[in-house]
Length: 369
Image (cartoon, rainbow, N blue to C red; front, side):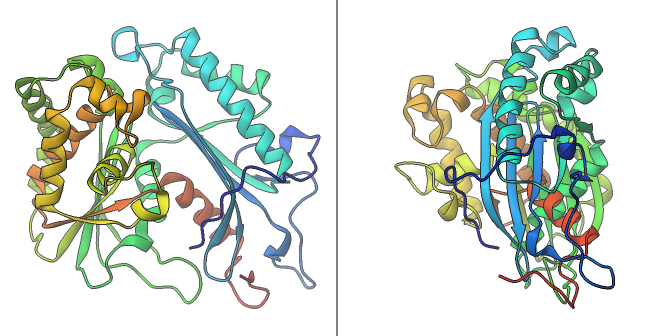
């Protein structure tokens, strides 16, 4: 799958925000081909993921066997900040999210998006004022967010990450460490398709109500002792071990596949990158020993050291050890020898799902690269 992200050279704006509502075609529609069906040559898709910690957008166009990213946006907004104690989204957090969503709306308009899916996850699922926030976004930004359930979140992550499954393996344990929840999916062998990305073969999945924001708020993220870190691991494992009891057998031939800011940060630290580079991180393999080494390095760092690291920075410095604790609980449950890092997930899954629904990879009239 090609990855071509550009932030300049935006095209003409669309005047109608209703074309950006969830999973819908814009008022001017997607181009058809004689005799019906779908011609992907003029289609532009958008996938937005509003999470507990991040707001992320991808804009892409279909290619012969995948898609090409033409624009992207990512901003840490901490929508779920304080929700552990209050049960509500704060005014400041909602304002940060609305500002980020305005940027996303502008990018979708400027790129002439013809179909979009715009989802919100755990923070909006669990907050007492989640519906009020959705109403605010509709009024202030002109887009309609779709709050997805945890099963949908797990399936979209699996769809987005399936291209990174080692075809020689018997399956994978996929995990997505989020801000407010984390998903675990056991996948069997990938199902190849004649055209387009492979289908995930989901054997089992679970979502646990633990993410980097909720865990860091509960135990602290600035100064984390080894004792506190061990407590966090034990707390997460209490949720994971039920899944292990049912689906933890026969892991020979499996590998771990992780998607989240936690694992991409670990990969960046492992590679000692002077600045984060997606092309070097996405698809990177790490051994069990290498992962343990990086976790030890992060535990030994002070908060200031973490802030100074170019692959962590101030926005993640108080969250990365909470993410490592979730990762360690997963590794305790599934002691696989290899971990593959994915800088992809929900947004890619949404794009693939929409393009499959529109049969963009079905001959004749397939999208061209």
